[in-house]
Length: 91
Image 1 (cartoon, rainbow, N blue to C red):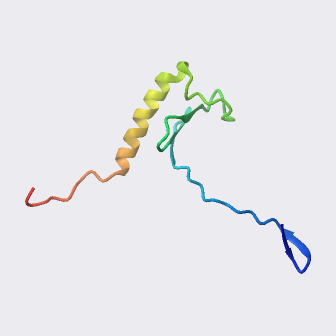
Image 2: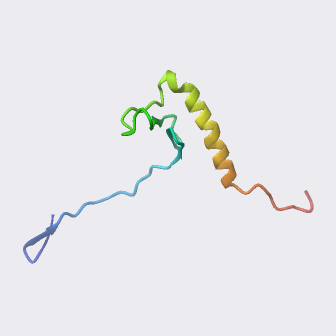
Image 3: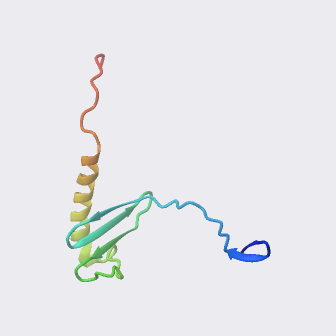
């Protein structure tokens, strides 16, 4: 709590910056979230679960969906990277 001249002015909260690093792919039907350096993630069916309550990441029924979304995710990430490398004359 912070007091100025004896009067309450608000709460003082110590905050550590977030260390979460993730990427998200959203399609018409699904949302895939991949976390850096972790084997878990999040997969939601936005049609069946618009409130994103049920994480389908480990659901065997969604294994094919997860694989397809991973492929799309990887391709989307590759598009973000430059495809041409500078030519090195001696190489």
